[in-house]
Image (cartoon, rainbow, N blue to C red; front, side, top):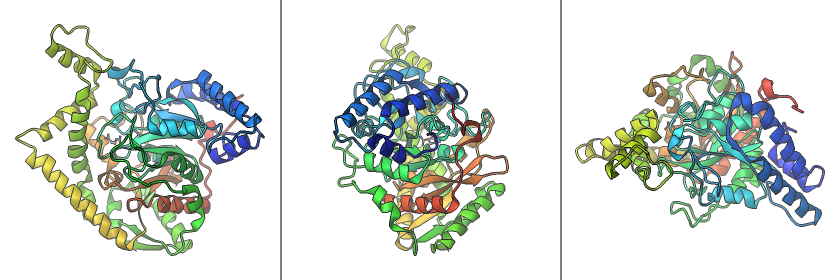
Length: 487
Ligand code: GLN
């Protein structure tokens, strides 16, 4: 059952060939067997999950119609609200914070009869690339338990890769869905900005943040987009009329499409991965896709732009965690000023503090023009560059990451960690849809992902290109450690 797609599983449930309860029990058992070593989950909901599964089976017995995700377990990154459950953001600050409402994305999963399996680990407030900044524990890469799963959505990626859950959702501000998808050998998709509601996602960089799905098959990413996309009146940046039949569009073919490859950016790529990348491009050529070389010189400013703009937004977003409103309040504090100071001091980890300080600095009166405003201008230029490129190209193809998964603890310098996002940030800066899909293993048997991006609202095109390559490559994507039954 672990190798079936979510689409197959829900069909079996709908046809009555297997019950939602059996499916849920099966994946809970996998969680019990696998999660002590992978540690993808902060919390699991066995009772609630089984109760929902029972209710779905009951509906089916009574001949009532059920939703697109009927009986399929879905894991949720722990910065996305599920009403009355903890939303910790993997921070001590919110260690006992319970969500007062459910995110729109979560509500849609429930409405389509998906089963909420649990909340997954992340870098604190989604700041990081390895899930190591979680205040609670580290998550491990299912392909190699001494390596990181990437981040910040490392728990959601590892849960899907190890087949504890067929589906999960994460959030991507600078690469946090795509980078862990690449490290864990799964599909991870960041849709066009505004396509999936951010209502109920704890804000990091609001003009960058986007919720998106993880899955082991392209058809499941499309299925999740069918469920998650669409206008939401509760998110003021939600795009109107953004509903589309993503699953149906997968079969439309890719012949005669043109993809652009910015070859000069490959200098940053670990040379041992270049063959995997070229091999994927060749497969496209075989399918009748035209490949052209392009130049996007401004991408080299992605990291400085992101680490000015996203942290500026983060510093204002995180100002709400002041010791008064949410969860953490220092017991040491005797005055109002101390409530602010000690609560933040005790509640936030090092990386979060670093970003609040830097973000406050770039927004301060004396430095706003030099940093924040200048960065906004360059962001605009980058957006224009991509508009120009997408006049002649259907998609831009890049590696997702500069290297395969690194060992836990290997990257100690924060600036070095920031370089993880060198290939992914552009999509957040320009609001573009971008997917990471597995294209093979390196010499150490670690997965590596290809990133496909397109113009705003061309999400379906990205999914079609990834589905076509998936069919062509026919990879086995389950990590050997967990490609077995646990009964
Ligand atoms: N790694 C990036 C960061 O630390 C991206 C995080 C994200 O996308 N949430 O900010």
